[in-house]
Image (cartoon, rainbow, N blue to C red):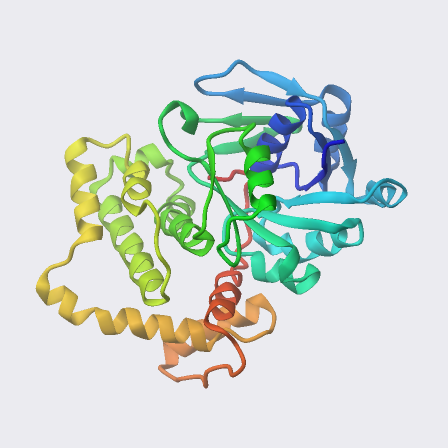
Amino acid sequence: MGKRIVIVGAGAVGGYTGAHMAQAGEDVTFVDAWPENVAEIKKNGLRITHHQGPEPFAAKPRALHLTEAQQLAKEAPVDIAFICTKSYDTQWAALLIRQYLAPGGYVVSLQNCMNEAAIAEIVGWGKVLGCIASNISVGLIEPGHVHRGGIRGVDRGHTVYRTGEVHGRITERAQEVYRLVSHADSAKVTDNLWGERWSKLVTNSMANGVSACTGLSGAQMAQNEAIRRFQARLGGEAIRIGQALGYKLEEIGHLCRRKSSPAPARATGTRWRAMRSMSARNRAARPSSARRWARTWRKAAAPRSSSSTVLSCARARGSGSRRAPMSGWSTSSRRSSVASSSRIPATSRNCG
């Protein structure tokens, strides 16, 4: 008998990935908070369309509204739970699904940002895995309808899903998650989950905030030289912070180039060179800034609410004050706690 799979969050990434699992015959149940979305999936299934590539299809997974989730208590325990909500919904989603997990069950964070630490606070580190969806470009455009732009990774030599254990070892359950997400697109098992996570954050830092502030699409931003230069500075700073924190970044060249793919090759090359190399004068002036940022983030990583952590970082940077380092925290714990502290309200159900 196959694994019992529950996906908390039938949005863009969760809906797209889960629909392919259901289409392949996996035992998938969606739990979602949007009543209209749940009603449409129950009535007509979850429709998947692509800008290029595969033909549309409608999967028929089981769907429950949050108010119906207690039905899971009367059924066999859940083997694998995917959390596919926005980051600020991570903790309640983990609390919701914890009570239904099998003794050997585990939770997979299929989200942007670093939410493994937040989930581990609820279910324990031994029941947590991570999965990154790199350059997937999907959106829940209406109830029961997920659309994917661009070309699938499997059709262009790009690995979309990267799944791994928090400790970096290759395990059977990591291989099982890899098998499941492979129904949707290209995938691999990684021994560098944290580096993969930060690499995705680098690309998001260049595009998401700028797009929200300007209202421009990725293609429009790519045609604006001033915006491209600003994005290069954002990405370069994110790379330096990640390196100062000790992360081994993955495929940064490829990921940064894809953000300006509609632009001419000359602009793309200029942008990447700006991120990758700095003049000797700038390199001499800026390492201390990157280290100072890394110290600020690490020292502000206290076991308290995410919003207060972010505010502490901002205050520490603005006032120049220094917080005492937190005793009893390992380096990896600090990284995880800091990276999982983003609480930025989202106005869209799109995921990149």
